[in-house]
Image (tube, rainbow, N blue to C red):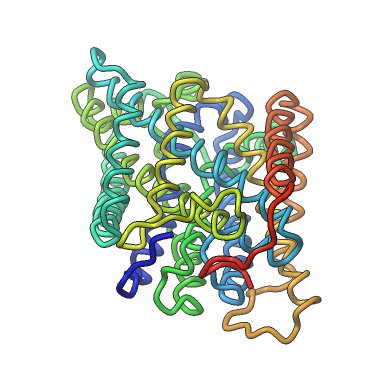
Length: 445
């Protein structure tokens, strides 16, 4: 492994929170509403869906803040689950992160980027555009952490600004239908329906990324302070943006026109700005998705790098260049993302990725109880607000989601579980006959 000659560049609270916002606001919010209206009719239930998703995610962020501050090493669920439970479970979590947590969502964000771009330029290839944006972001983040941070912060600021402009412009729109967000009989009933639970999977996927800063905790300045702050502030901001955006979608576009559609932002933009404005909005959304792809490309390789530091068979993934950047891990994730782009359909990846990632985050959040029981003496610069209610609420809500998803979409759920099984097989294969040796610098003691 190449060891950098100088102190690695550290990122501050702004970049850490920017990664949280960028990793969350992307494919899910601009694409999943069309799938949710197939399950739910009430605007009240649809908006509550996003508010509930935000509360659940905030509970997770509060819990991750304690875990990350107490065990500050990059690697996300891989590192935390390895420390809290067993390296085998940590490896499986890392495998899930590498495939469905980052490579899969990178592909989805890139596919959405291609779809929104070709909505304006139909002669271009959506698939090749998707591959091209992943290649561009990978090249930038493989070159410099400083340039990558500037690129990330700029596109995230643009993302938030354009969303606020979009919401503000919607007030002047003249939609052809009317809605009411006040709770009515069917709206209240839908809150307890299987459709609400299944729709929460799409919402959970849209909120996926609330834990983004945990993957680079080793690269954050003053992580005991800045990690919890970045998780909570980023998640709270995105919750507000999501509820506002979904109100705009419901206010401007009839539900029957959105059903099953991916380019919901294009439809809403056409109502707000007219046909030409819709095309401009489609390009704006494509630009917003650049920051999502960038964040995923930045974060994901830190998981496989940590795995490579600990597993001799994966040592090549821990190799860094003279700037401390895990280039091999970036190339590995790039290859996986391109594979998803050229072989998978959008909604299939969305469901089985969401199902499997919920499993991984549930195991991690439950680890806060394990940490307090097994290591009560450990230094805790930050403790979970509302403990034990907040982690329990997160676990109960997500368990409820998983049960209904498995019943409604068993095929995709089994695909997700099979990916977990592949990760277990890879772990035991990597350990077979592996010599005992000291871990490389930066790995778990």
